[in-house]
Image 1 (cartoon, protein in one colour):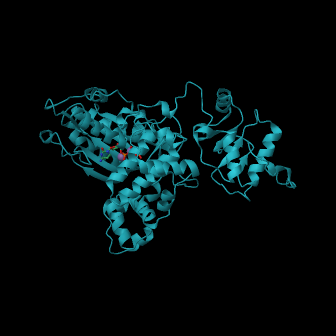
Image 2: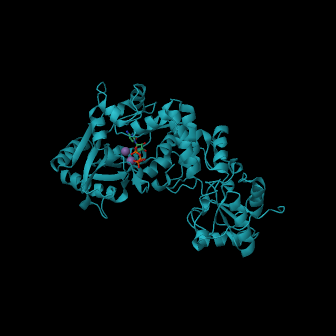
Image 3: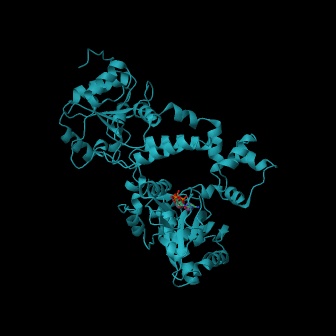
Length: 497
Ligand code: CTP
Ligand code: MN
Ligand code: MN
């Protein structure tokens, strides 16, 4: 136990409310927010320890809220403690560290929050919550993991994604992919990781990833990530690539010319913006704003009405992120087709015509089909499939959306611009296109990698080819494709890898 700490003289309280307000002055550790559990500890000891910690620059909250990062308890009855915590907290419990008093005393002795070690942890003994270490069979393939939209390790995965993106800007594919894979593995875990040791049975985590992770678990952030986030080149490339039609290559070109802002790019007369980029700038405010589920539903009704007016047997399916149960997306993705083979060819042009007449088509990039069955199977996966598709910007009115548009307060236009993608495969390719467009990108990558490496098969958005049998495998549903691959079926809402 700890040795005779000197209790600072209680400060005179000028106002009684002060105790409830977290004191800013004297705070040394902004990222650590303690809560001391009174049970077993007792009120007076808790008050004493609270003062002690505050005097050393720690933030100690009187109330347990989602803001708390470290819960400290003297209750050795782990199960009753966890039960109590689960009843009274917060959604954030998976991200909190639940610690034994020994962590607190070590930290007081050191005068700083010490690294959390195994001996400090009060393990959750409730049987229904599996711990990450018990999940010893996490697959290296995202298509063998179930990943919902609930990410229990967001602090870590956000950091990994920054690193991946930075490597992508520097065209270092290997490390970029490594961080994307690591992030994807962590997204599938049922709870927050608390210690690096818990990752020992997890795939796709190398030395570099683990070092970053360890730093974040200890300090709440990692030096390498902070450095990237404050880097001018990273910030500028991030800004430029946020414009519809501007990829990493163009962004790099503008950066090399010394451009650092939109106004500089728009003022530079040597820069020629293509049609897509012009629309990207024109509607920047709207299309850089997330699209809500209600807005996606409204667009579905609009397109559904339009395609059925064109042909009564039209088939429309929502795909992409919204099909995976996301609340928000950067666009809305649809597949449209008709049962009669070949008839789908005229579907998108007719639809575009109709949307134009309705006055809601703000931008359209239509690409006719280049799909050729005789060119299959394709050995190298191409970024784009060969089906007819269009990338649109549509005008969506407030009155069309249940609960209204997802726009900024004070925006009184009554409409917004939304990005919509449509793809139109022949009906016999529907299942492959749906599987390919439902995503996530990481899930797709691993489906193809799994098919190739584990099954000696080639999968893309058009077809599945068995190299051993030298034949195409047919499918009318996504389930058929999973079955051909010998994979357990994974629902779209579990493909958020
Ligand atoms: N896709 C594709 N070919 C393209 C564009 C997209 O196969 N030319 C697939 C991607 O593999 C992805 C899916 O379509 O899985 C949806 O892409 P996108 O809209 O970019 O991503 P979402 O997962 O829908 O994410 P968001 O919600 O941000 O739109
Ligand atoms: Mn999408
Ligand atoms: Mn899309």
